[in-house]
Image 1 (spheres, rainbow, N blue to C red):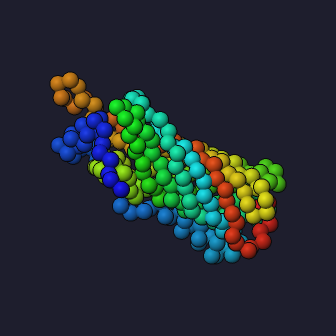
Image 2: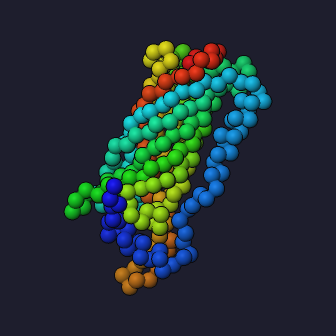
Image 3: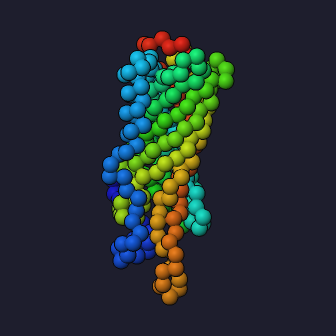
Length: 234
């Protein structure tokens, strides 16, 4: 796959980032977000809780939010695929459960200038969600996502974009047939993708700017592949 060259704004940002080392992109050399998964595994091991394992896949539209408008931006389609681990750690609260998810997620956005420019980012995502059953087939979900960019079609993405994001998740899950369920969710990124300086007409650096955040709307299916008979509604 040919790497897409940055559009003019990013080329300018890249130029100034090479000259100034004060602003550094947000890197995540140590996957500290794995701690959330380890906590879940410890609970399962020592609490001898019964977990449901499921495969999941979905399609989504992803885009960006910005404080300084980016000309011609629009959403693009993407997808996610992975698996989840769901269990009920609270006795007497079978309607409340926790979900740990590991997903490969393709995010990005499009910019229409002289032609269409596509900016795609492949993410490894770890999520921790709370699931509350409001009826037998329907549950509300909410939690947090930790995402690390592993690759992109942008040539200098590692020197231009931050590679780590934290997002809030809200959604709904509905069982549609035996071990098959349908889910819909919104992921609202909290960390900026770009850190750069505001530059005046004379080339002077005015202030630091932290801008451009992810937003993703997903619809997908989840197939329970475990044989464990849980007491929960799923």
